[in-house]
Image (cartoon, rainbow, N blue to C red; front, side, top):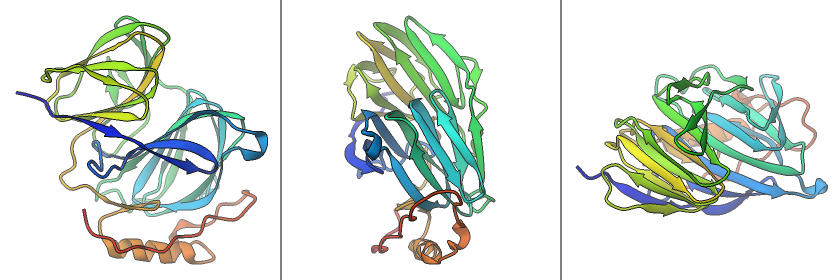
Length: 300
């Protein structure tokens, strides 16, 4: 049986002064498993007076997943959490019913992946929470690949980061030529998101070798049991996976929902002085990000 493979080109944007490449959501593909948003920020060295600074803004119906590769960022949220995220660490903020937060770079050099995880119906109105994970399991794979298991399990290593749906997130890095064959969960769809370098991806059940460069996410549909990854020089990529969703969620601005009417109600909440269900971020100096006009939305 052949495996479906698709190349997704990211589009360039800007978040708080930091250039980013966004792979998800994309016009052709909205999700990979429950992963519904994938930003690659940096690597960049910013002037001290132009460091990344994202004022308070709301989230609901999702969990934000921040993986720091270089630099430091201070997180504050409406629960009263304040946490510096450093290289090799993950911040997981489960918005649930609603939360607001801010992010400020504390370093000139910055490189990170910021991802969203859509919450299933049974969990999307849960109480918000924040968790910090300074230590994540690592494994040497094949010849030259170093893996950090961000969420889920790979090669007998399980991440302490929780998820509400079956999920996989792995950082794969090589400092030079490297080759490995990874066993995959055939129930999952997967995305290979290039951050640096160049990699040849050979999914089992696909008769071609796909060369992937930064700015491209290679989507591999469910049914793939293994993949070979080969690079000739220093390379870094994220492997994202999860069980396909029957119906993609509705995304607008910082919200993940199901119905357009929800977006209108959440926008009205954030427009309130007290932030409504999203609360207030204390300690941040500066204005919060105002809610934009809600466009005409349709269910996906």
